Length: 190
Figure (cartoon, rainbow, N blue to C red):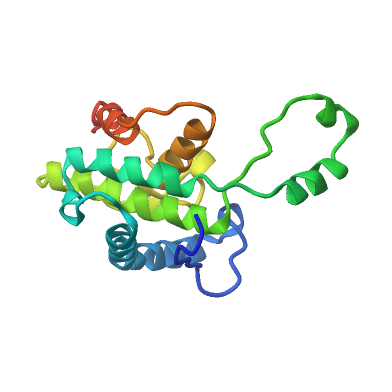
């Protein structure tokens, strides 16, 4: 994803696992405060660059289809070959013999994933207005990371979206991918 607006936590972010409980709380508050702004950016970006009607993003389940149809062609941008080679240059020799997937999303694409994740969560909020889907601080493998409660599992929308881009680049070309994932996560409603 080129030219997509990025954002970063204020200050020097040490990574989720290194946050103190107080810092994790501050980060969560900052992250939640970004949600509406980031959704608006996504909507503006979509409207200015999509062949679909701007009315197609109405936060309904069905809107996940045109959103993914547009996003999947825009967002799958990975690290360049030079960075991949620098990773391999310092890796043990056995790593070079194994066909490892060393791709990672660019920073712009990662921000795009966060914003589409906000949209995905908003679709749940619209469909289930009597349920709460608050952001909380994750535990265990998601330690200190913003996660959504209201499901039987800790839900991290950005991870679902970045996984969708990885699946797309690996040949999973379903135009209904986000809608399919929405149906899966409905089964995990608490």
